[in-house]
Image (tube, rainbow, N blue to C red; front, side, top):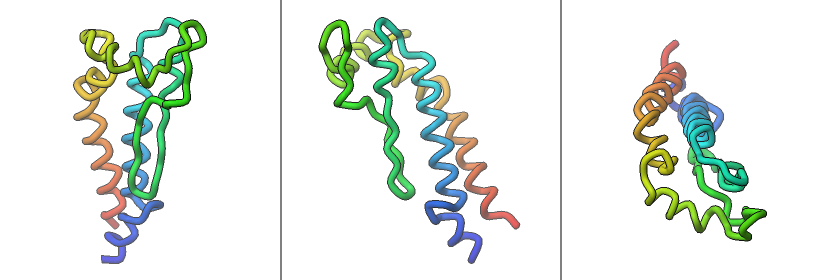
Length: 112
């Protein structure tokens, strides 16, 4: 029971699993995002909070050429589909593998 309690603390294996998963999702999405000026790719942001992590496009980022915010035009890029849909592609291409590995990271903290 003590191993289980330790595993679900932010610094425990569940915290490590969350950290692994969010950084793996970020890494893949960043790698496949189309680049014109690089603003959209660079705007990918991770926010950690205990056992929760969120990957999002920073609302503060601005494309230096167009003056637009990547957080606003990312929706239209996703709607273009295919290779432009970096969020959907990340989930479809790597989601299962990332989550399987995250579960393994968590389970490693439960075994003696």
